Image (cartoon, rainbow, N blue to C red; front, side, top):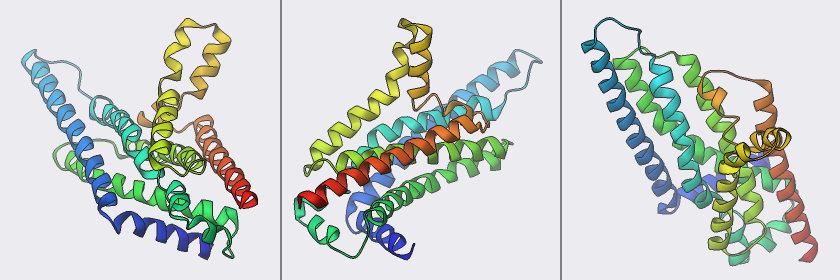
Length: 255
């Protein structure tokens, strides 16, 4: 475990040793802040219209603001995560340090888990910055904290799934640009795969909806923790890391 944490710490420091980490965190915070501003403005307009219309039903802050905000936050992953994962193995191969890493007294699993946790820690920093916006809601409003907590859990699990897949793709090439473009394309495919479900039969529709990575996030955004969604994300992460291990193992044998 100590070796895994050491690699994770090295990866995290590597992101912030250059402007890359700061740019990614700032970009994520900027887009999240824009989504937050637009949704707050929309919520305010809706509240004023309801107040001018006389007595009516109360507006739920979690349903009308927090849930859409967290759903919009998943869009940012499509843009940011390829930039995070494209360098994890591709840069090692390009610079030639992959040979040193593979001949070190570390197992493949320790290397992979260390890199994965390092990237996940960077994503956790991004999510931590967005907690400022949640704090603003608690200061000026009265949202429920449990749906927010489950929503952030869903974001973390979904992010882990994307990161594990990005690690695998990065382990297949030494070109960061190629790794980034392929990663974005695969992410986008998983994002829109259920869009065609209305044009196929019921069996294929069920399969496509299950494969859609966003379909499993909806309940988290609503404050619902369903074991089938937990199993999906954890299985996705395990599969991504397993495929990465196989790719690294083949690289070791070729070397």
